Length: 627
Image (tube, rainbow, N blue to C red; front, top):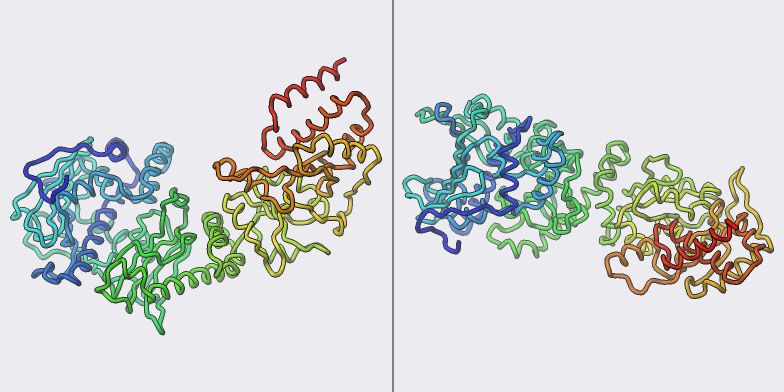
C-alpha cells in the first residue's frame, strides 16, 4: 500500500511471523492475560506523547482538544472493551505497516521461547517481550482499530479475527475520532470479565497507573461523567519520598514492557550547568534478545515532559540492558530529532547519566554484594564490552568486574580480591579463556598455577578474548594469559605437598628429538613449568594471538594465517622419560612425537593437525603393542 487512503476494503495476509504469533495467542491459555491491557495503554500513551511533540511545530493539530487522554469504555452487555486515545493517529497505510508486521526486536525470540515454555510460565515470556498490540488476541475473538491521523481529513478501519488475515477500509469521518485511535476488542466468552469496571480498574492501577497521560473509564453509553483512573502525573516529576517501591515497579513494567521487577532503581535530578531528571531501572532478569547484534538501548528522551524519541543514544551499548528515561529542561523543543543527537547538551547528559549508573553499581557492589552479584550474573558479559570499547571508563569498569576463578569455589571475585591473594614474586593477573567454565577449569595449562596456589581467572564469555588483548593492567599488574608465552613460574614456590622433578637425561633426549621431528608443525618444543600431571600441552607464542581468540576468529573466517603453537613438555612425566629410552626405528619415534602433539591439540578442543595421519599412526602403535 503506497497511499494514505484506500479506495475500497482490502484484505491482506499477515506476514508469516505475525501469523505464527497470532496462532499462539488464539490457541493458548495463559494464567495471566492481564498484560494485554497494559500493552494497549502503553501504545496509546506513546501516541499521545508523539502528538504533543508534533504540536510543538504545528499547534493547529491540537484543534480544540489540547489535553491528552486515554479513555477506556466498557460494555458488559455487548462484551466489548474499547481503548481510545486522542494521540497522533494513523493513516490506512500506517495501519497496514504497523499492525501487519513485526517490527519490535525480540518478538521472534519470544515465539521460539513460548514454544519451549509451553509447559511452564508462558505468561512471563509475554511480559518480557511486550508483544504489544497482538496480545489483544489473547482475550478477543475480533479486534477493530479505527484511526484518523492528526491533521488528515480521512479515517480508516482495520479489522481482524487473528486467524491469518486483516482488512483495511476507508471510514466515514463522522464514525472516527477527531484524531487518534480507537481499539475495540470483542471479547472471548472466557474473557468477559475485562468488560467489568472492577477488573479493569484493578489492572490499570496495578500496571499502568503512572503513564504520563490521564486515563479515564466510562461504562457503556452512560451519560455519567467518565471516572478518572490515573491522573497522568509523570512519576519522575514526583519527590522520591512520595513514591513507593511498588510504584516504581509498576512504572518500570509499563515503561519497559517487562513482567519482572527492577533489580536496581536510580531516580535523581541533576542541577547545575544542565538540568535534567533521570529515572532508570536495571531489570531483574535477562532479556532474551540481550545479545542481538541490532539491539540498542531503551532509554526514552523527554524535553520538559514532552516525549521526543526512544532512539537517542543516552547510554553506551554495553549498558543497553538499562531501561528508563531522561527528561531535559535545557534541550530546545523545536530541534529536530537528528540534531538533538548531535547536541552538546545531550553529550553532557550522556556522560552524566552513564557515570552515575556506574557509580550506583559500584555503591551497590560495596554495600550489598549479593544483590550486585545477581546483576553481574545477568549482565556482566555485556558490561565487559565496555572494557574493549570505553577507554574513558575502563578503570571504573575493571572495578565493577567480577570473575570466577580456580580458587573461588564458584563464587564471584573482584580484582581487589584477586590482588589480596597474590603470591610472593607474582607479577601478573593470570587468566584463562574458553567457551565453558568447567572445561576451562580442567585445562592442563592450569596445573602449574594450581600447584603453587596461584589464582587464575576463568573467562568463559566471547568478549573476554577481546578485552584481554588491550594491554590492560589493574593497580599496576598486567593481565597475562596462561595459554600464551612463557609462564615464568620458577620464582614462585610450590605449595606444601606438591613436588616437581628435574628433567632426566632420557626426557631431554626425547625433547630434542621432538623439536627436530615437529619443526614444521610447531614453533618450539620446550620444557614446561605449567604442567604437573599432564604430559604435554600447547600454548601460543609470546607475541602471537592467544589460542582462544585465534580459534574464534578462525571459525568466523576472519583470522590471518594461524601461528604455529608451542608444544610444552612435562619433563618430569614418566611417559616422557620412557619415550626417551625408546629405541627402535625412526618412524616409530616420529609417530610417538606426532601423537603427543595431537594429544595436546585434542586436550585444547582442537582436531588433530592431520586426522588421517593421526589414525594411521595410532593403528601402527596398537599393532606393535599387540605383538
